[in-house]
Length: 368
Image (cartoon, rainbow, N blue to C red; front, side, top):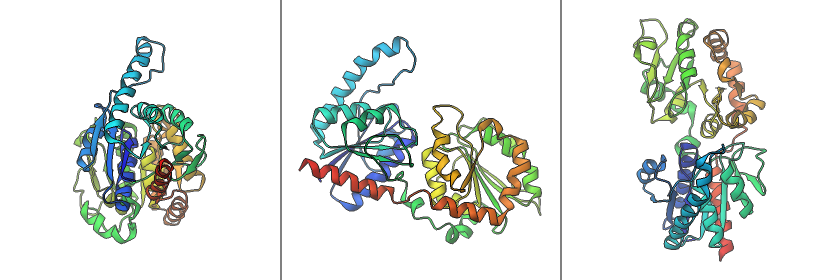
């Protein structure tokens, strides 16, 4: 195997597993040429070049879910994007094409089929998207992140995540992590995060319950998101008065390994990356799924919740009253926290990058 093309973009849900897989392939094959395929609109334009990988672009083909003028333009746009993807394949001459879903994967899948190239499809969510439903029809090499995902030929690999998370020893890093964020080394610690963009419901409800959390002795590391609508005045002052629990607010954290290590419990959304990371490192969670889309976030969290590793709270139900009545007691219940952490760690595989690399090597071998 000399060259691989990885297609995925738009959001972190596609680019993060793509990059983790690229790193795994490069560890195995140091001379491997890895080319990534994206569109001009997505996060891939920043994160893929920053990671040191070559990025090729094709035109985006958003799929309208309603009957409108945009829907009737889709066939022409798709033909253009497929032709662009074929041109990329002809330049790169990959041994295998790997798709992670999203807008860019449809033209990649069709181009790979046109050039009779081996194809691997990875689905990040429990509920597969349109692109991967199509791609799975063209190959026997289909990987899923969660059990029970309805795709033909699917094998469960898990979701490839960053090695700094997959190899994290939370207990060993706890003291360093709490010092890094200015937290008390001994208090029960709640991590709150709504993902890369923040989550208004989570932010406002936890902030409103801050006094009850502090009275219970719970300190908070609250990652509100770079675009949060809340300002500093919406949160308890930091540093706190002597004798009270710290409440540390960050707009963005680039050392999530330390954030996970500092925490005893996390409140978070349930995107595929988040569920995989927090469950994989054995961190008990309260999952508050994003209340839009096809319900895939609730499905992502379901295996962890069913195993006893987390709670699932609907976005409208995650109120200041829920925080005051339930959350403070959960964070301070050591036995329950520990049991949830053990249950969570047994659900999600952390070697998905290696398992997916195995599948890619098998598919590439078919061409030879």
